[in-house]
Image (cartoon, rainbow, N blue to C red):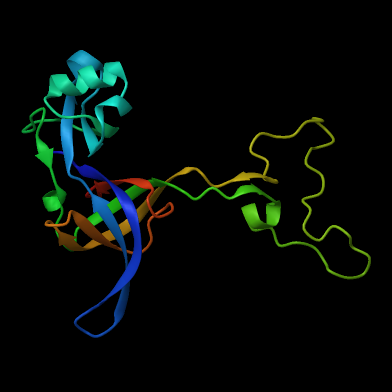
Length: 207
């Protein structure tokens, strides 16, 4: 069985527990998705299930994509994603909804973090900064970036640069509520990315 689903982050809200405490949750519009291809080790080199998400107009997909989706027996879909694992018990064209999740289930969510543009070392890497008095004029600057011996900058050196817009996997999340009628998942805690961002919701691996 497939171990996840594709969705879009809607935003955050809160629920009240039976004890009367407020619990912050993230609302995700998850699925439905349609199985467009089942990959196997013998044919493709690895096991995976490819799914499509969000119906769209036929003119908005490329000709090869249109043929691929027509072969699977589904309409034009905007997003294609893969979930690693065996496709046993799954058929091409099958519709998968949020019913595969249950309240209280542990999950992880993969998304793209918000892009922050160019940022300095203090904001980007949480550098402490230097003294604000006694003649220091380098309060938020990272100073030298290269070593005098090798006379080059070591790979991975922390400094100013592009911040955010990276693939982030948020672990330790839990399903709070499943709304099958509206295809909604309410997840405890925060999910990477801005509202409207594409996310993958995966079942957490059991140790």
